Each structure stands twice: as C-alpha cells, then as structure tokens.
Image (cartoon, rainbow, N blue to C red; front, top):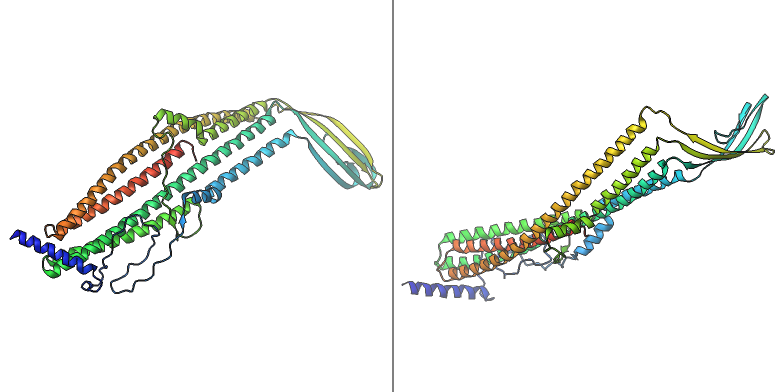
Length: 475
C-alpha cells in the first residue's frame, strides 16, 4: 500500500510542477495577499532598493534603472577632503602655525612709528618711553613730533627662544594628531562601508528566502487542492511567506539605514540612492605575525604616540623658558624723532641705549608657573604610558578578531553547504509525500540563518582587518 501512495505522490508532484511551468495552464488563483512563485536568485544581488512587492493582481512594472555603485576608495577620498573631524584637525594645525608665528615675533626687532600734535606749554616728542624730548614754554603753542622707536631682544636667559621651540614642537604634534584623526576617520568609513555591504547581502538572502517560500506555497497549494496535504499545511506556508516578506522589508530598511550611516562616516551629503560595491579588504601584511612583532610595528608607526612625544618636547621647552624667568632680560633700544612748533621746520633728534629688566619679587608667580609646567610634563609622560598600553590592546584585540573571523568563515561555509543540502532533501521529501510542511519550513529557516551567518562572518573579518590597519598606524 505504501509504494502505491508514494508513486501517486510523485506523480502528483510532477503534475503540479508541469502545471506551474506551462504558460497556457496558469496555476489556480492565489488567496489575496499571497505572492506569485518566482525563480531563485543568489544572495547579494546588486541594485537593491526599497520597492513594494507586487500583489497577485498587479501588472508587472518595468525594472528600475540600476543604481550607481559607490566604491570604498571614492568614499575614502570624500572623507579625506570633507569629513568634519578631519577639517577640525586641519584647523588645529592652522592654529598651531599661527602660534608659531607669534612665538617668532619677539625674537625680531620691534619697530614703532608715531606721530603727535599737542597744544600747550608742556610738550613731549613722539618716541619711546626710554628716549623722549620734552620742552616747557611760557606761552601756549602748537607742537609737532614724528619719530621711530625700536627694541631688540638681546638676552633673556632662554625665555623667548625656548617658547618659540615649544611652538615648533606643538605644530609638529598637531600634524601627527591630524594624521591620527585621518586614520580613525578612514576606519569609521571602512566599518560603515562593510556594514552596508553586509546589509546588502542580507537583502539578497531575504529575497532568495522569499522566492523559495513563494515556490513552496505554489507546491503546497497544489497538494492541498489534490487532497494529499491537509489545509493546515497551506495556512502554515502562507504564514511562512508573510514572515519572509517581513524579513525582506526589514533587510531593505537596514540597508538604507546602513548607507545613511556611511554617508555620515564619510562626510557625504546626499541621499541613499546608490549601491555599495562588492570590494573586500585583503589580508593585512603581518596579520599572522606574533603579537610582540606587531606591537613593535605599531609603537613605531602610531601617530598618537608621535604626537605625545612632540607634546613632551614642547613642554620641556616651556619648563626651560619658565626657569629663565628667574633671570633678567636685556634689550637694545633706539629712537629717532623730528619735533618743533612749525611743521615745516622740525628739528631732528635721536637716542640709542640698552634696557635691562629684572623682576626681583612677584609674590612667587614664577615659582608657581614652574611647578605647573613640571606637573604638566609629568602628566604628558603618564599619557604616553597609557597610550602605549592602549596600542598593545588595540593590536591584540584586532588580531584576535581577525583570527576568529577567518575560522568562523570556514565553519559558516560548511554550515551553509549543509543547510543547502538539508533544504534540497526536505524539498524532495515533501514532493514525494514523505516529509511534511514543518520539516520543509525548518530546513528553509536553517538555510536562511546559515546564509546570514556567513554574511556576518565576512563582515567581521573585513571590519577586523580595518581595525588592525588602524591599530598598526596605517591609513
């Protein structure tokens, strides 16, 4: 009796299949809300966009034009040119450049031109405070004066030169900080890009799942109409199709959201009407080396450490400059002027000399400034030690994630192959009447989960390699 039933089911499956394929013999009308059967497609299909699924009674619309594909290299260039974090870092370099120019100014001659007119009995000619010309008369009169005065720093125990050297080191530090910002911004772009690509591949997985479920629905409907399957099987399959549609809508929305996040990471001001490409991040040079070897490379290349080293040098110069404030400062001075009551007949005059200033007592101001400078230097040294520990952690974490992701991809590939075979066998068993709808849907769920797991594993590997590049100080 069993062989007879099996043969009948096989014959019925063949009849249903032929009925689906024959154009002149369309399948029975579907219940409102059910999707028509469609062919299976590989996950990860490009040009995926949020488009409503057609109903059974709708007229198929022409396919939309393919979206433009944005590459990772294009987004990296956009970020390097327009990302606000990089623009802010470049502005900091400009600020440091301005401070360097200000620090150089006291080392150069300071020349001032003055002009003056006064009326009265006491007149002081224009010029420096160290060389003035004063006249006293009995009758009020107008008095004209014009002149130039200048000073030149001769020696101040290193106060001004050391502050200039500090500004030079600060400028170098800001340049290294700009490079560190660039590396972190590129890391964010790469993570966002590979996340968007993963979301795109998950849309492909959801599309394939929906098409499989639609095909199963047509098959189940035929079995129920011929009476070889109970009506509950049709209800279960309709629920599976609806769930597959929900998963597709969610996957499409996640893809659009991921592209919006990619826009933010790269500083791209536009919509999400594009597709990400299928680029991958190849193996990082040295990713299989020992941890100590990679840490040595990172310590030598990380711009954060170079920036802190320059900050240390700059602060050391500040300490030396502060110590110089305990000594005097010597300036050379000079001035020339023309004075008189008649603008057409001014009398020339000049003076030259030296100026020595020495703050004898300022209430402990210089001592407090020195203590502050030395404490700041100690803080910078502590920050350098913290950064070295962070570099080691970054390298160790990235290397471990790379290794785990590579092993996960191997396992996920195997799981997907087995899930695909499980689904194929379940479809055969159901077509011959041996299996049931629960077994078929379980196999479909397993296949979908395995495909999504492989997508996530590939994203983890790409993201981990991007993290390793950043940990090694490579853009």
